[in-house]
Image (tube, rainbow, N blue to C red):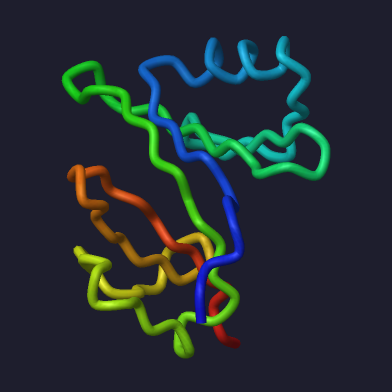
Length: 114
């Protein structure tokens, strides 16, 4: 089984409010905001953008999240370096981290099984 394209872009920021307003000015609509300076925005049917505020001493980062329909059925090719295997998240999905040949980290996200 392979991935099914880009599910989301995950961003960290030093100012959730400013980052959300920036994306809203580009046509994204707020789907939800949390009570801990984070939230999700979407523009049409494309991938969602999830933004989370981090402390000033952390460098803001961007991570692409690839969609995987079934974590249990996913078997990465040996060329794919698995950094962390699929694990349950606190937001109701399973997530795996892989590293590409240039050292970039990618997230793979699958629905959690009930």
